[in-house]
Image 1 (cartoon, rainbow, N blue to C red):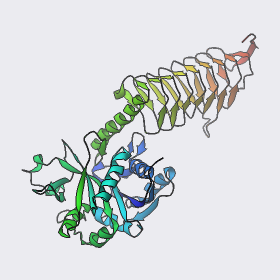
Image 2 (image 1 turned 90 degrees about the horizontal axis):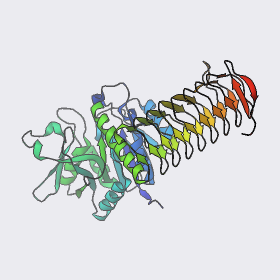
Image 3 (image 1 turned 90 degrees about the vertical axis):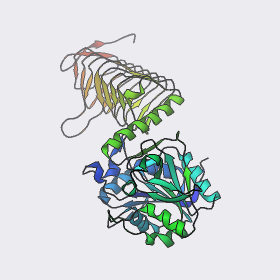
Image 4 (image 1 turned 180 degrees about the vertical axis):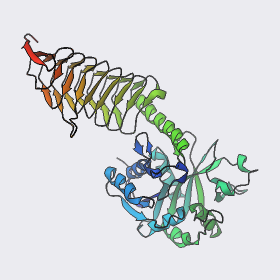
Length: 424
């Protein structure tokens, strides 16, 4: 049973423009392994069973909110009307917080294992801290805030890169992960004391550390080990690196569960891609979110399984094949290039090379049903909506425009009945 943290409110800071992304799309809606950046912190916070989760919106707030409510229920929202820094963003959420503790995250960075957060919360409470900063060592800390410590190894402040002495920069490897745990009482008293940065004119949340220290509040860093997976996105280049990090994490998790992935570097998937035990994924395979592959399946090479596709146990989907919103039962073979859209396929069906479902009539998507043990000949075009019966056969190059009865052979363009099939 998952541990509950009903005494904590989660706050996700998602108001910024993301200027360095150089994109009209809000930064938090850029896709990381097929899902918006905002999905990852919200998914983690949801898994912790907090009392409340608040997202601070600002830039294109309605667009961001619309994406969030599609995926998550019970999220509350605060609005930062003037985009003037992370401290003001958090301040806008404080009036909605009624728990003694806050777990604050930036929407563009996170660790991927919730155990990191569970341990950090326990650390914060056991040490009776006013603030706990999650930190980590980084070999390339460019653009990240650095943890500055005194001679007793206590945190003095978090200094942004713009304020660092370039001579000291190479020696400062401990970076701020952008994740904090605060006591609400102390934070509420001190956050208004944050002053605007002299150059950027923004109110940085990192300045609260120095303010807390002056008040003799306990501030400690919870330093996360190098093996814990972390990503941070400030630019499109960062997004490329984050994609590699998250994808590797997901693939290693599948391998540990008994999935064989022949080439992780050319296998693309998301956190909502499900693959059963003993399945084999061949190179150059793209598996979108909300795709489910059963046990002992073979997929690839050069396969694209799009959202809403389900592959039954012991099925094989081979070279240059695309499926979307399609459900295959067990023991289906589709080994060579083809396309199925909005299709339901029964068990023990053989789909020949070059088979295509024409599922779009210019106005709407139509469905195809292929029943158990049917044999679909090479280069068959199935013009939906249509149903192909049990143990039916279509000849090579046929164009199916009408339903095909059970145990019937059809051939031609348009396809016509040739004969009934016996002893099948």
